[in-house]
Length: 402
Image 1 (cartoon, rainbow, N blue to C red):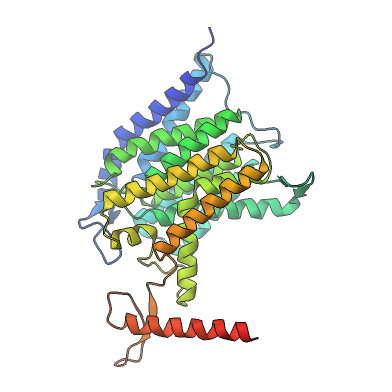
Image 2 (cartoon, rainbow, N blue to C red):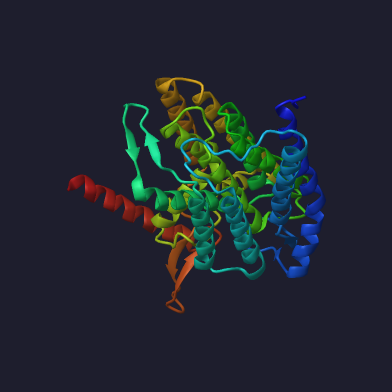
């Protein structure tokens, strides 16, 4: 007797959930032993030292799910899930798994040894390149407005690497409040699961529901007040997993929608990353320079506590995910209307929260003559902000006159 098609997915979810619940306390102890601990600081919200290797539990949760899938396939008559979509001519799932291991190791090494940005970036590129070598590649983008298709050719390989590395980093950057990154990944993962099931993509559906179980189990310890953080071992893994799921084809609609939908699903971390780049460029500060201008910082500054800020961002993320689901069910014109509405609404929220206003500015110390960075907490910041606005106004008038 053939089991219900929902039984395997339920078992994967429960396996990941239970393993994550069991292993998070173990990850907590490992992080303390290795010194992978976030201590209170200027940019940190936490007031006490908290270990940061929660990615161990999430990683093991995903592994547990696929061990259960293997047992079910071999002994219980479950369907084989490792069957690539037709546009993947040859997909090596062992190589895909190696890519997951590579990104997890990169994050874990950063948690313990605090890698330089270049070292961490190198690890991300290696993991993304392994995925590309496995056959997970954006090859053809179909234009929904015409009958033609854009053949990427050899450019497909670097574009796919760039896409995966970007997905990894947007989740890494948003990991700033208790339960924020893991919760948004859980919401995004469930949306991708639904879309994957509808598209009959069993590999993408299984991976996304495993991620949902693993993050939900971890949230038991990570939601405010958190006793453990994801760390880079977790945040890099979340972004990589969702990036891979999106590339395994998660919608019934081919073409640009296949690329746009996962981008909208990850809309909040993308907005947060984009605004950080603009904010730092405006202030002539390095893009890699951390600041307190992220969405969660702005919400805290508006008077929300951690729990309220995270729940608000969950709601925003859920709204975007609901919008993407509707987008896959309608024709082109309504799809454009929905996308535009989501974009405008998110842009209004971003402007209301002043996400593009710099929170770090350069200031010359009159005593030492050194160029220093100042924040809104420093008395010199207001003066430097007025100078910046004056310079931008002059440049704007110059462009209008030319």
